[in-house]
Image 1 (cartoon, protein in one colour):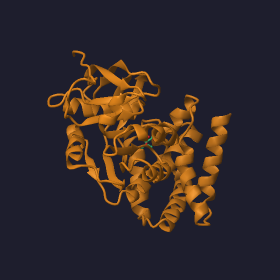
Image 2: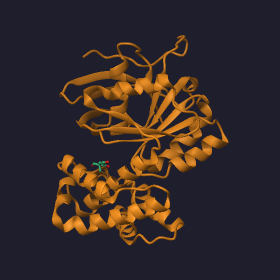
Image 3: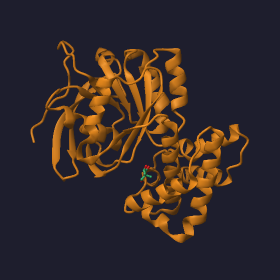
Amino acid sequence: MGITSRLPPSSTPDNTAHIAVLGAGAIGQLMYHKLSVNTQAVQANDVVFIGRDKLTRQQPLSFIDHTQHTHESLAAILGTDDDRLVRIELLFVCVKAYQVEQALIPLLVKLSPQCHIVLLHNGLGPHLPVAAALAKHQGQGLSLGTTSQAALKLSQWQVKHSGFGVTQLGHYCGALISAKLKARLTNLHCDNQPIEWHQPVLPVLWQKLAINAVINPLTALNHCANGQLARAEYQPQIRAIIDELVQVAKYDGITLDKAAISARVYQVIDLTAANFSSMYQDIAHNRATEINEINGYICQQAKLDHLNVPINQSLVDKVLQLSQS
Ligand code: PAF
């Protein structure tokens, strides 16, 4: 396949909806490719990455889709001082949960107040400081989301679409996402990848939190693939993690159906049986984990509500210990 550049030159008058992705990990690159593939025919040159430094550059990328077809392209990575940041209408934040605040908040003043921001990460918590910063400064609208699509980084700029799943999004604060941008995201429906909009969005994110609170620390601590957690020996621990989470969520005003949550957790264990969770991989590659935003968020909220969550607390302690060792 030919190489296409997606850098909109600053001198070009353009009325297209510019979409940017912050975070070029596996999910960030997957989102970039999905959004670009779906818009090439009608609106080329309007999906970009935002980089970590001031330098704007072009980056060759390779994407292996679910049919094993390889797409080569040339992406624009806008530097953090690039004046084109103000043209971005939709920003997908795909960095790890613990990087959101540091990566996003300094950028807010460079974005247009009309830009809509979507946080897409495992765990919960970063939306709170981001919402506070938005209220104080530019006032951009904020949506939150989660995806169960999976992608594998084969090298820094080569990503393979490795699993199907639903992407669930919903409004959190500020201006609502415009109908035009919502329609652009609906384009991600290709290959039977559903996009669902939920209002309110927090119950959906707590449900995903339950999946990550079970699978991520248990696979990391037991050095196993997700499917191993279906074994009977893990059942008491899984039940206890979910019991504690459901109780904390209730104090936070979110009523979750324990049986439905448990069924969903076991369904994901089954659907992703051969996968190694992101936390397993973070530990294996000596990277920081999202434990503070997953089981740690449950502990943090429990503390505010004077609840005890010993199982989740012990998982946080053990994972932190494991990452330090
Ligand atoms: O973090 C992960 O690995 C994924 O969110 C999930 C769903 C647990 C599958 O591995």
